[in-house]
Length: 595
Ligand SMILES: Nc1ncnc2c1ncn2[C@@H]1O[C@H](COP(=O)(O)OP(=O)(O)OP(=O)(O)O)[C@@H](O)[C@H]1O
Image: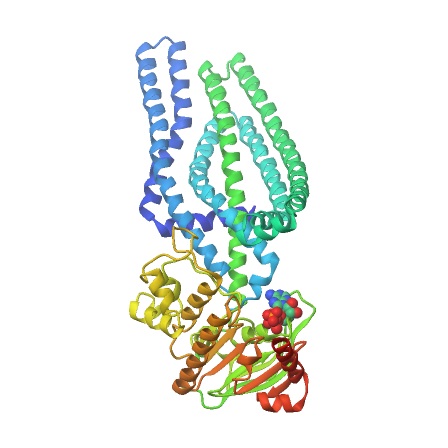
């Protein structure tokens, strides 16, 4: 129960902060509208009593009062709805923003790797709709509470025994809450199943997987898998629905018995002359009203309860994101020009939920101003090393020092501002070219010159000319933009990375990925040129991962990783002469080219 009130209070406080005017007007209309309901019953009682004692003037007056109050009840509620509906709309937008903030709030990437975090983000996304209903239901619920209080007072004055009626009327609410709880926990239990169902759905409509699905003829197999999961989901949800419906029915049955009992009781009082005919009408009317109020209350409570669970989950996500962020004592990264270099001091790293160590006891020195190639087989840990160095993951053990500054004690976002990275699985940002590239350096996001210069640095001037203008839309994510090839997207990604003109670390993961030989050569030239610029301007280190030995041999330093360990380091000539792992890889590839 505490949880529900907390959620309701949190939502109402948020609505109050967002738009006090609508809140006050909405409540100001709702409350008298709600109080009009028991007032109608009282006016009817007076009307009937006046008719019984044959006082037509008084009866007509009470009839008029009943009509006016009834009109108020109908009209005020309707106008109030307009206000709190708009309020719910505003709150809904804010909640979506809160969710995006919570999902992206952590400084590190590890939360994003955690499937249970993803499940909870999915649940909260569904919850936002319910939280909106919580606002729409929360305000009338407050008015309803006032209405019930007045009804209880009227009944208590008539006979204290009649106070049992509102008490019995609470039963459907209690049972309804339990029923909601049942459905909620079923929803939480099936979250991994629904995530997998959605994944299958995405997989089958994604153009990239569709071609393979067709070639391999496995559409039926995937559909079957999805159908099995759907059946599991429906079984669990149906069982929960049945149990929750049974609980609701039990609560409503208990109230129905109380209703009939109270009407019979007041009828007996009237027969003994202890109540008037008007009192019988009053109880019949109030009991009917309570039934409607309780049914409405039950629905509203269901909405509020469900939205309170959403609030709880949203706040948990937010806290979790905050907790997995850098310490508040972290100092901003203030090195302007790198003179020493980057050091990995006994660094190890394991992904959350994985029992495999992706980096093991890495001791590595990357001197300032050098161009370093990372080499190793698939899964050796090359991308992971870049992710740890760019502060996407904190090391599990050891330290990373940039010019002697320990990244663990540094505000990670300020260090990231001094890095420029293009990952193998770079983002395809379907916006205008201006913004798709410009977001790489927010201060210049709207600067056409900065974007044009970045496209130039990325050797993508021809692409810019083909697109025509930086204001043109690229990709078809949300509009009719120019569709780009994998290699062209990579150029856009590279231009985005080099929007930062003074990175202390330039990291390029698989530059040749998605490119034809000529394009790869051009991009590698661009990388080398950018690396030289970065080295000259701020003593920056360029780190690139590639499987092409012709590119690797140009590096000042080559680092060979195997199973998460650094197994060799040196120049091309040194490593070839050493005849170790690198020499083996180099000869293997040279043979492949010459044979
Ligand atoms: N998000 C993740 N969660 C769990 N394990 C991961 C994750 N990303 C990578 N790994 C694992 O960490 C190890 C190192 O992966 P990494 O991507 O760093 O290798 P790589 O050398 O870059 O490989 P490739 O050449 O294929 O890109 C692999 O065993 C991989 O399966």
